[in-house]
Picture 1 (cartoon, rainbow, N blue to C red):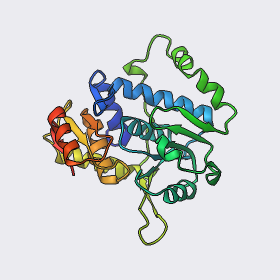
Picture 2: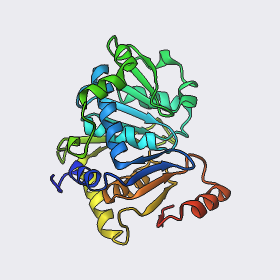
Picture 3: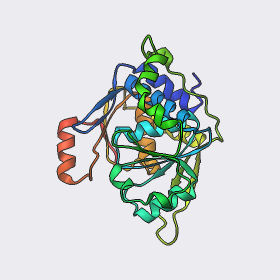
Picture 4: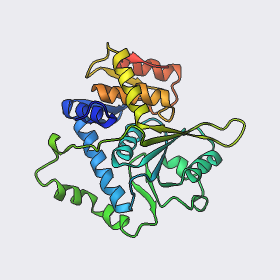
Length: 272
């Protein structure tokens, strides 16, 4: 595993912390690092069935959640480019970003998807729910039949079970495009910032070095939007690379919500 690559850091952490908790939706489901890896592998199967190719754009729009993080890492580790969209954007901005980025596949909270007009997103071929990873719509002739038997396909592929040695993320290149992050477009249309893997790697290493008091198993409450690069880098990328346990609020961080979360989780670090 190459420590000078982004996925070298992530793969080492997944392997090292296999049986430890990786992320939890507050008062909801918990994923161990092995579950995190399994979900990523399964999403790769869906991507292949949908005809997604390396370099294709995959948009994500939803509140902070374990599924958002899993979809993000699955997108990058497949070789596609993640287009992160703040879930609080108005529907016209969301439609503009999805279309402008040439996104082929779209992960969306269902309440957001239901507000959008399918006909205004002609480049999108497939939409998955971020609430459940359910297939919401597709134009692919091969994806729907695959989705019906996806669990059996995965079980057949790993007939002896899915183990730590089955994890093998690809090697990313420093100048390879990883993420397109859009501004809100306060005075005009949203603008996309192209983020290469060297930025993900250097920010993750910087956070590792600066937050030296953070250790594997430490609890982190994620309250900053993952569609913003600061929250993504320090709450998600750093935490996963260190083997931390991320807790997603999944709701507006009001004082009452935060105090309840802090009392229950007892986080080692809070970023705001």
